[in-house]
Picture (spheres, rainbow, N blue to C red):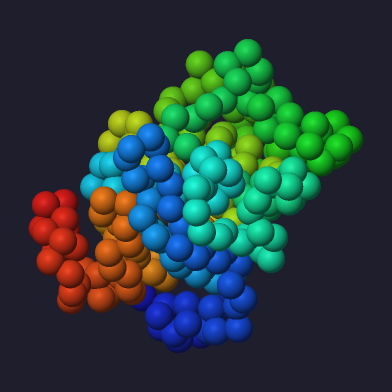
Length: 262
């Protein structure tokens, strides 16, 4: 596939990232749950505008890692820096980081007693102190973006799973983050609803958003990711471009995983 000026997607992606700065830096990150080590010396740098897909078997640490990036889980050792701010116990740093990072979960986590538009406007009003009218206008822009503006006044229970997940994406975008984290966003959906959510994520990637996506959707990973990262037993085993990953993986553990899911 090529862009409108005839430049290949790979070249366009390279140009997009050439002058980008590292927006996420993780160095030697460890995380324990009691005697179980969930993350083992994980290090990676992610550039602004980069699309990274994290793969791995259940329990490999991939979800724990991205939850550490906005302090839903506290790492036990190592260093995490988000957009120049180090993740530590300073509440000001933590609030600054969380204002830059949006997250979409496997379960939609919408407030069932609030309408769709109220779910989306709550954060901008409470956290960013945005006037109600401005927050509602912003919410409608993002509902347009995810393709369901007509659902604004409904409640979550009145929506399909795919629609609820698109509301969750709109809610995260309304906080105007620099980085979006997706933790298996389609795994709770019926198969026919997966495409509508992935289409929204594709559009978001094309817009230049920095994204880290934990998913088993291999088609999405192959098409959209700049880089794939494979986790196993809490460790970063292998990383590379989609072409490297799907055509010439180096590690035996990576090859076994791909043989089981492709």
